[in-house]
Length: 270
Image 1 (cartoon, rainbow, N blue to C red):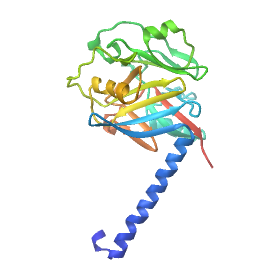
Image 2: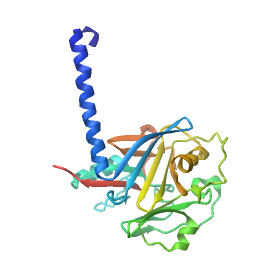
Image 3: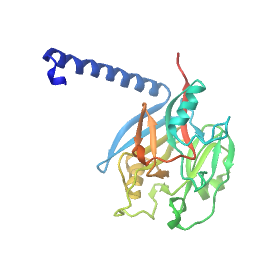
């Protein structure tokens, strides 16, 4: 159809579209930056990852599992976004918060707004039963003073932290600067994968692969590219990150209901 337009119209249409697209991208980037959210594409070992860095001095990271009014799980980022809109809030960032069981409940510790909904899980399971039991697993937490950390489950239990938000998942990707020794660089078990680390107490970094990778390569991303001494695996296959108004990670047909969702909301602007 475009080939039937006059030449002068064929030149002008792309220019207008590009100008509008550039304005939208610039607006999103400015909004995100103002609220302490930086999002960019990272290429590591020929794989693309979406990496999101949160400045906790500006971005208030929360956890959301169930609608506080109905008690029903949000289950999806889209549903959480709609709930926020209905309550005068704009969703700037979201990511699934970790591994859950067959009942659709967090498999390990889950703390939301300072309330421990699920206790710390210290059971030593069979690694064949799932990634959570591929030890050591660990905990990502933000305490009441806004300090973020990623620790093994044993270290978290010994620290007696009183978190404002926390999720337990597994396995640990990086432990004190070393890759999880259970990982095999030649493994052919490749999936879309998401993870989190806290390079500093006031900074949190999330990453999701935009194509399948194995555990070893994903852990290397956190240690060698993102500079994380401790990093935690969140989930695979169904993992997505929402930022800049877009979804990154697993394709939509792979996504299943989530048991918990990380989110940064801001009041809706006029």
